[in-house]
Length: 421
Image (tube, rainbow, N blue to C red):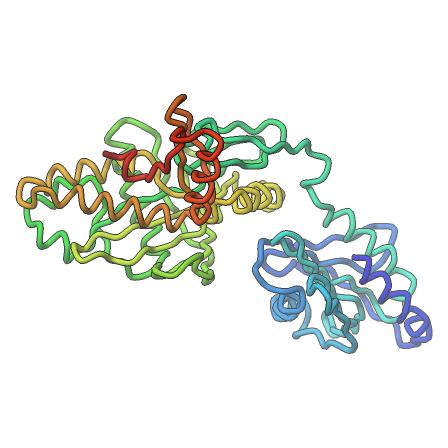
């Protein structure tokens, strides 16, 4: 925003020299996901959109030029541009376009902060834009104000000591165990690090009749979107059978590829979707990750999502993204191991033990070791008090040795596989 104003100061003398016939500014319906802002005291208007993004400001601005061509008669034409080469989080361009054949000029700019992007197109007729643009930028400022400011943010430790998350007032942690956390508040809800065991169709076919007793969905790991919808459908059916409210996905709005947090995983995508629960429609943004399939046909599906009522999702999203981001920076890049997923694995092991005795123990140990490596953190145990601490996995051995130098024999590493015996 500051760079946009600086750019305006540089081009403003040129704008005041324009002398072209008057054009009629006709308000149109805004493009999808954009809000049109006007002020009765000033001509012109502002198109603005806000969304989470992994793009740079320049990439976001180029994307915006294509998205608003439905509002204007055609794609706007960029005449001059700027960008912040040092950080890549601000970019803008002076543009020309037409609305119902009336020429308009304006300033388009994009900014990215903490993974949340803002795109704005402030415009008016060439005859008046030099005078009205400062006021139009004020409209952008009021519409694009960071809603995370002014909230009383506090870092909350997970009750089991396995992590932390930053939450504003009014939010409560509703569940936390071994790096997984769920929380709700005025802006919506978050569930982080949910892990679900899944069996492929081929693996289920090998098990034959026993596959019907598996406490897990049967899905092939084709893509994260189908995995997300399949797992949610399975959980919904189980919830209904248990007499609990079920969350049913209504539609997938958009999906975009995401980078994998570590080698050994299959695919990852950000998924924007709507779901219905207890008669209320919610909109959610999820990171869906598929693990590699094992030799027995089993694979793991990981998800982290934030959600809010559909009508307030856009306003709540910056707060939800900040909460999401705070968990990412708390040493847990992806936190999994949902309690019922562990119980499902143990129950599945009992079924398989009828024909493959002892194999379930090996599978559990392999899964626990993989989980610790994926999460990047592990436990150490104070033998005297029984207290557990979560530390960086790469540093765990060194930390235990250093502690035992002061109190010999008091501390030891506590692998996850030991906890799940």
